[in-house]
Amino acid sequence: MTQPLAAPLPVAAPALLPAEATMVDTVAKFFRALGDPTRLRLLEFLLHDEHTVSECVAQVGLSQGRVSVHLACLADCGYVACRRAGRNAFYRVADPRVADLVVLAHALAADHACALAECQRIAPASGD
Image (cartoon, one colour):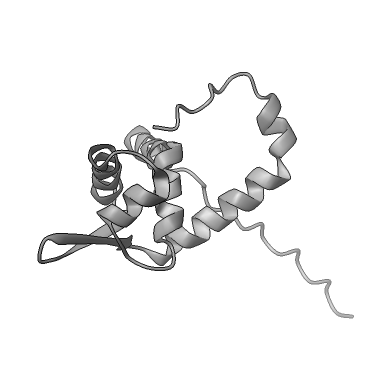
């Protein structure tokens, strides 16, 4: 007579957020950097090709100074990289996972559009 197989031991699911408060703060900051509509529009524009600051200005319709501030934030946070050639600065997405994240965010937002539209706890974005 054979003995019944023992049930497999449960495998602990990996924690989605780090236990340390400082790392949770870092993850929250990661999302705050993406929470600005202008920075998100710039990231989407840069997903498939590099562009100059002037091209970014034309795309988002803000002043060169405002666009430069947003691009500097994205660069400081590691989302975009800058390549200088003469007087021009060319920006591109620095990590291909950013494209995956933006595509996933669009899909999730589309799936939850009604709930997001009704949410009263998050203020509308300023768009600048």
